[in-house]
Image (cartoon, rainbow, N blue to C red; front, side):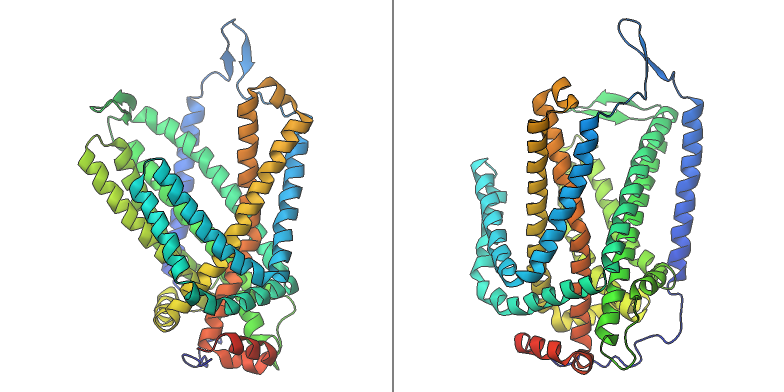
Length: 474
């Protein structure tokens, strides 16, 4: 364990607002979104149709009529309780059976990859099936390379789950981020529907059949297109900012534990609030800056997807598909890079460009270890998400079959069961994202701090240092 460089002078002694321009641009973006919605909501209200729907027999029914039966309420509340218990049960399992889960999830991931390849080939998709099969076999072929690094990942996971139990505020941050994300997504969907209705009318849009026989939306002007583009950009940027504020906050807590727990100065009793304050003030501009880069790539992918769906030319569709594939790879790389860069922002209070530069140096020095460790931890978390989601779906299926609520009896049975299972699976995956995000941020922060300054761990937590030194000799 040799430090890449010394950390003296890396910690800012005074609060400094970094990347202020990005904060200002983000606030202007929020202001533009608000102004657009004020205009659209007012226009929609002015042109709102009759609030009653006239049925075939002449009966008028309120358009917003919606009834929730008692059994549906029980299903929703019990599902939240079940998915919560499953998620945190798996969190405890990670801490107690870490070695087994890391090894089992590695082979489970290979099994899924090879299985997907076989299914693709059986359905006639030879190219994608072959790609999945080759990927799975290659990972298995290099098992010894992965196996040498498994003990280090196991130790990191055990440490992170222990710290999380010591600072449960990290889970509260993850829950808060999830709640804000859901609320923002719900409002954005509502805003999208209103704006589409308003600007579809002002742009005189209509559905026409293209040369290939595919229906598409045609407008007399580009107002609707530009509004949809802007709304998706706002969605991507805001979503990234919310996610990264939570990541920086959690990383700050783990940074406090690494550098100050066991030191003469000592760690604060509740570092979560201080870390959240830094994420929402001095480091907020850096978060907006890094999130803007990802949002830009996501917006370009949205444009390419629109071109594919609207174009009747095969060449255009092919080029757009290739470009989108390239951008998807770039987005994945940028997201991983940003995760490590934001850890630097959280620990040292760096501006984003400086954090990105130091992250690049870290990647050049410890890149293979970072990628392998990230994948091993990701396997464990991904397997947990799949297990919780499928178990939640099974609970929904059993509930509908045993209780037989009113909506099951009144609607098409197969459709009702499918809808409940789908919602339950999504709910399980969303609930599992809470401990996943905390563990992922904690592992990343511990890895970065350990790579840059292992001597601090030696001074403050010698037992942990020697345990890691035994497993991680580089």
